[in-house]
Length: 443
RNA sequence: GUGGUUGUAGCUCAGUAGGUUAGAGCGCCUGAUUGUGGUUCAGGAGGUCGUGGGUUCGAGACCCAUCUUCCACCCCA
Image (cartoon, rainbow, N blue to C red; front, side, top):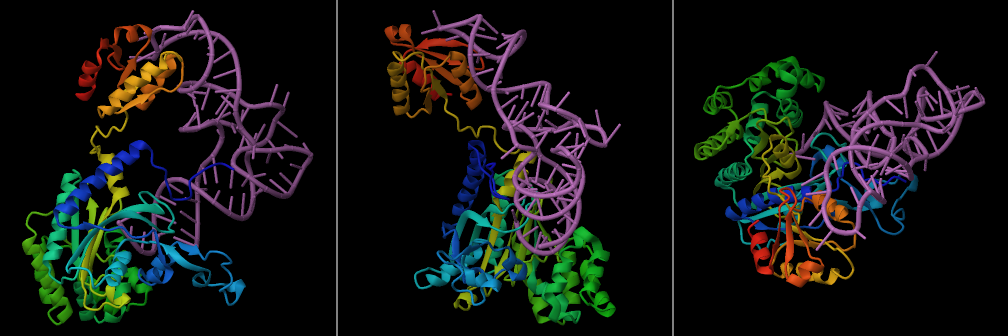
């Protein structure tokens, strides 16, 4: 059997972990600056906690975990066992639903509004593609217990500040589910909102004709199609699109509310790289108010983040009237974008600064003692544990990206010094312990 | 879940209309060089050709299944 990682998963080498830590560090810092506290939840939840929260498509992509022991014993008809009969747990699909579960479970203790951030892997049984994996990290910030639109403004600024710190130019696209509901309402297709939004969401990809023909195949009649057509135009500016919607949706209470919400956010969001996009729909069906999506400007990649407001999420777990709004960063895609643009810092080094050579069994204790003392000084030092040819030890240091080599042999031992050699420059010097420490500390 | 694509040495890849012991470059190991590498030279190790069936006198090449890679759809970070 050839060893390999499971489909859609990856190993992370030291270098890749360093990149991930760099991005997560910036995100953590930003989250905390904005007043969010960390939370971690289990890798898997009870199946019923997750099922039905992500739409029909989402249910299909949830990784289910077989019951332990004789997992067939609950199946009424073993030959036709249903997933829920032989599996009772599932890997988390996102961080939002486990968060909602946590909020409801601890409703009594939490001070509202409750703000949390969470950075953990999630799993989806999807087919892999560019920037798309079956195990990937999400980094979320959510707040529950406040209907204030200032939360939306704040989250947009959080996006702005985080991506600025990451040096990744992005565009935040903003829309509101209520606007979409309003459009459907005034067009007489309020009962088929989902079909409409799913098709509309593809406008930038398949064009107006593509959207129309998809709607047609879903059973929309010509009259309805022409009623919906105004939603597929492009606008000069955000204010122009809002002006248009105010007239078009005047007869729809929900639509007008959506327009007012958009214009409030727009008014207070200042210089953020924001664009109103009434074709933005997003699939997750728990969103009820504002929805947003972030795309990198110079990289061909799916979205690097998304989020929105959900009024009923905790309602599913029995806690009514608790509105929430949150955003998500796609860590893996962000790293891919930064790599493509060369925006990752070069000093992500994790390697030791020096490798102490072992020349012979007799020299080893003295050489090791140098490593021991340097480590007590807090220096990252590696000790070569075998007696080996110098060529081999040099090659090892080279391959690991270790800049300095320390050689302590018989003559150095007698002098109480060590040779410090810089691999790239090739220069070498016999130094005392304190001089050597000072040299490495300033590297 | 659907459609296409990929899989040969540690890595990148050759392998012609099915025909003896499957090749190259890089890397790796050993030596020239018993305390100073990166160059050079000489030698060497390493492959159940993704896996399982099938066709054939004969399969790395052809057929089927399955897994995997990448891409697209669906959907999404």
